[in-house]
Amino acid sequence: MPIIGEGVLAVKLISFFKSVFDFLIPRFITEYVVLELRDDGYHPICSSRWLQEWEFHRGLRFQKWRSFNLFGQSKIPRVVDQGLLQLNSFDEVLNLKRK
Image (cartoon, helix red, strand yellow):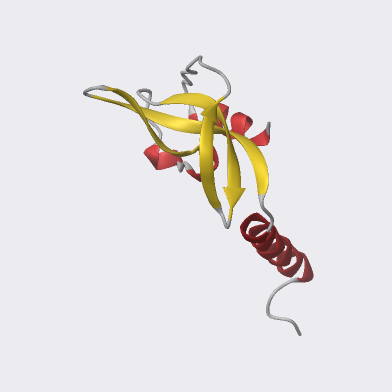
């Protein structure tokens, strides 16, 4: 009798291979970056895919960036869209992650 269901194991394996792919394959990626207002303007905090629900607040802005991903790190970031998005709920952030 298996301890972990087959479906759960399959999801964990897929997640593992996605992580390996993200680390080993160099490529260009386009993603939304979370910006936070500080004393001298907006500063990048993290990718929107890493933002947790408890970290979300209405003061955050989102901007589309393109960068070269090498060994899981973004190199040579470039702003694709100069506009800043203001989102009112974490559900809207989840919709950004699906794009």
